[in-house]
Image (cartoon, rainbow, N blue to C red):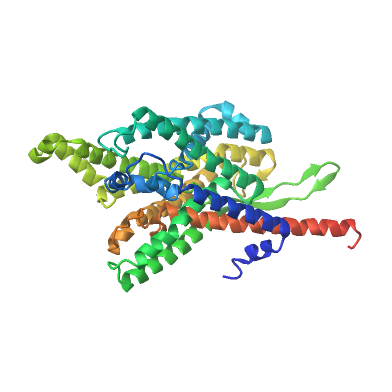
Length: 453
């Protein structure tokens, strides 16, 4: 444990790194405080009823916002519009060569893509805020307080939700620039961790939970963390040999390196895509049943029976939804890996710089070999993501845990939230370790300049 926390302890002794850590901590505290700035003219009791009838999809969206959607605060949409915009532009790099060339233009291309991503995120936020405001005013949902002018509620909601989404996005960029690591990851991390004490206390003080269930939950939590660390750190290393070449007036000797292929290269994106598709039909069916008059429900009409069947099939504890969920996670894992990992460009770059995989000729044979290895590695990574995702659904049922009034126990029993928390924590330690090594090299260079070596 001490060795794992050593980068954090050593970083605290370096003034520059300590200031960066304090800035990140202050920014995360500021974001958590913004979670409690609530939207006006909202009926909180009806909002709780909406969450209970959502079939789990609202709890999943709420997980990324640290409870902001359940409270309906100004940051209720979180940074999901920005994540969606980023994914869209990553896919555009495959469909349109212009975006792919722009990515290769260094700092200018990166800044241009980031600017377009932000503008697209603002547009998506306005659209989502408008749709949400109209849904809140719908009598079927009806969380707007009685007597509130609709136009006033619409304008307030759209402006507040748009500003609330831009604030964590700006805060994340500040963390990236002045802190350590990716700021957007820190924002998601802060939102999930902010609810962990609430979930833990609610479960520990519940009279419906015995000591055996708590013990099994702790064992499952620790085992899942170990499993996530083991797989996310796992990689398939393909050996690469570089031929001797001329660099200026001297000959550079042959070098050996390796090409790392991560098992979980796609991260949590496949789970986000898959769960949105799986839970959406059940959510629509549940809301449709809610809008039906009492006479239709009593007569058991054809439309009611179809909606009731769909709501049962696509509930989180249904085997149909679970099998479809696992299949979609596997499919999106392959798709997103293909988006972020261009095998053809990789083989061309190896050939360009004199690299060769032993036993395979440069060009097409190397491309086919890497593609075959990547397919097998991605299959293992997809199985890992599917098992972690299903654990979030089935662990509370298998352990017979009571439902949580604060939005579920996903942080404690696995799933996307635990995958994000563990991944960001490991990224923090790796970034601190790299910063420490860089400063050691700087000290070494200064000593050389002073003639001490």
